[in-house]
Length: 66
Image 1 (cartoon, rainbow, N blue to C red):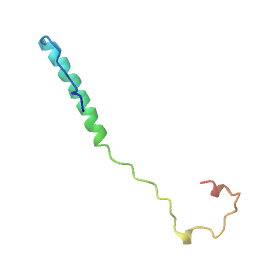
Image 2 (image 1 turned 45 degrees about the vertical axis):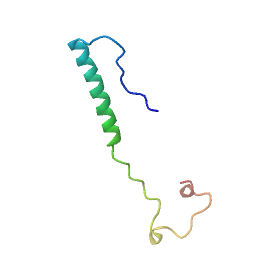
Image 3 (image 1 turned 30 degrees about the horizontal axis):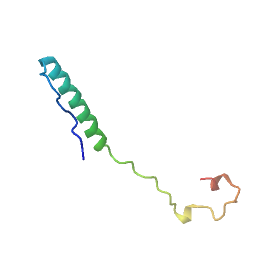
Image 4 (image 1 turned 30 degrees about the vertical axis):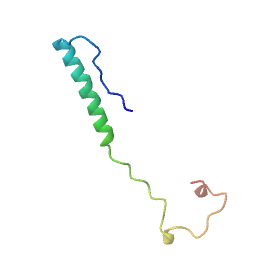
């Protein structure tokens, strides 16, 4: 079961404490929203057009390392 993010145990908040709590929760929500809305990185195409590749690469060529 999911536990709540914030739990009030006892006592009462002063205006300053409530403002600090609100600022922390707003900052956490902003970070979570920015992380969730981050654009996905487009993958790099691994294919190439056959007519633009040389016909033969040596097996020990640097081009075979990729």
